[in-house]
Length: 146
Length: 395
Image (tube, rainbow over all chains, first blue to last red; front, side, top):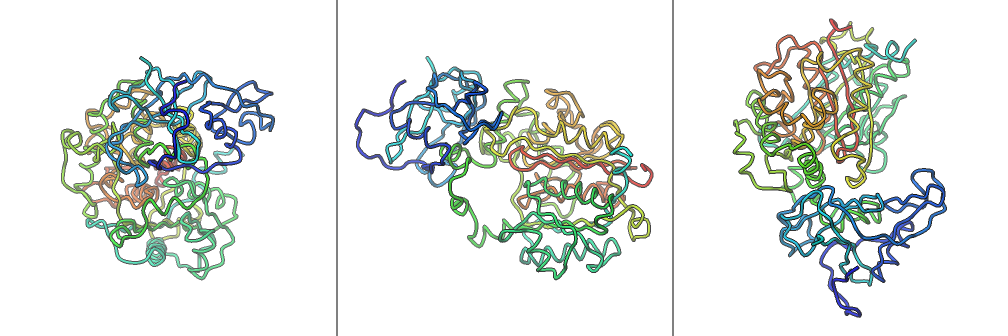
């Protein structure tokens, strides 16, 4: 999948709230350093879940594999924020926040880039891409598919 | 005995109190307001603090809401409950209290809420930064980075999905605010008492599309309390009792991104259980108090409780069905949209429902109200709790 900044780009300034990292989420965040989107799969259920837990939320088994996701999804719902929603978003103009249904049948919150916020619509096909965080991790965001 | 026969009508709300102002502000600390509401509600019932053996409080100043409140009040309860599900906490408190009273585990229960967010804001206290200190939670890790404005953004996502799925319109959502405001014109304590139109709602600023400012609840100071006791004891008390006929609760998620279906709340389950225990159906409800954090919250409640079919909420409200003279008198106090909304409104749903059953509501009284419903929604459409209550005639 595409990257939003050149390989080896230098430090970037924080332009949004940068999340801490849970034990359960650590493998996800590690993969984002290489701009890889991975999901936790339960070995017993053969199903992914989102958000990351230390166990499968269907059967509570602790045996998880992290598998690469396609990055393809559909916009499930979307809302445009006319102004920054909190101080860490200062300087951002109108932007769209939504829920994306990934092809792997999990739903995650994200935001949309490279498109006018008002043009993001429920049902649109989107593809995962990356926005750099200041510590080398990346935030998964989505582009509307042409 | 069946669950219904063990529960239905065994406990009653016998005292209520609330405080709110057209200025949006009321004087006093949270603890002073809680004590005042408890005293007022007990006086309303004809009881005293010495009668109270059950304490229900969701509003922790430290780590344990009911402990801290009881200590402050100087009482030693034998039934305690700090259930915190946001705005629906108080419907759950009534459910739990009624069950405990029905089993003889508690005699007189009090649930209380007070908050002064508007005054706090004027003093420069509170705000978003205070929420960041909670460390790594699923919400801070998987939602907060995207800048969804909370809480309205979460409800906006549900509205977005409902519009895309069922063709619900902004005009239909706006009509909910218009009908609610009609009731508020008849509540002298309401923050907003001027009538509005659908065009007014649509012309108000977008807070998080598709929700406009007038689709969103107020931020005001406010306080309230309810007192419950057994049906047997209720008959000897000062005011007509509002008997708890049915109750139900269901929570489905904490984060909006985890809501199983953005168009269906746990109200499907809380309502079905409450009606089943009560032996009643939506058509029996004379007056409904449906948590109106946002207009979409009401629309989903109407569908999930069975007042109309799923997807038909927009058409149901469009002709003013919720307003004075409509087919389902709803949010007769003016609701969280126009009366008061001190962070959590569930207490005020209960207080208004009881007052309607007592016939105390003056110009906004629904004539002959015998069955009232209070439906709390907490979190981000997360925790739904439904109370069906009735006058003595419904027993």
